[in-house]
Image (cartoon, rainbow, N blue to C red; front, side, top):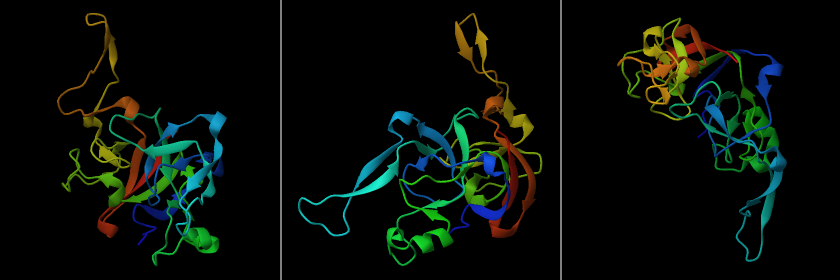
Length: 221
């Protein structure tokens, strides 16, 4: 069953100008997935996608309109230059009864659902409220006790795709620098610094204990 508040809670403060509506998600998922662009070739933006028909008949094909520019769940090492924002609609094929949303567009709208292949709204900046299902509590991806604190910095998780981690300032190292002795760019971090400045997406501006923990974040563009 699709839980519409599994990751993203209703309260948000965002401008329409900071919402992107031209990418579809690789796969399906609930709203609140932090995403990066995976396919941005505008020459092939919109095509018909080959879909399995409702019933299997020989020599029969079913086609559905698809947005070819794609986003994927952000991964370890992604930076501000990679991460576009977070999905603010669900991407799904079926409702809680196993019925196809394709045939119930009104219900899809009511549940803030777009079908896979359709453009999903992505918030690029603003204020959002996310549950603990959208972030890791510790840098190894475990449950831990490192709950968000006001002032923590938001960075892509190193352990779970599509999630973020709340890092203290002491965990953020300087960006890579050019070292002529090795003729290349090298890390400039200490042992407790697992992230770089260029990975900071925003900051935590409020927290709460309901829903097994949640946090209000401000995303920067």
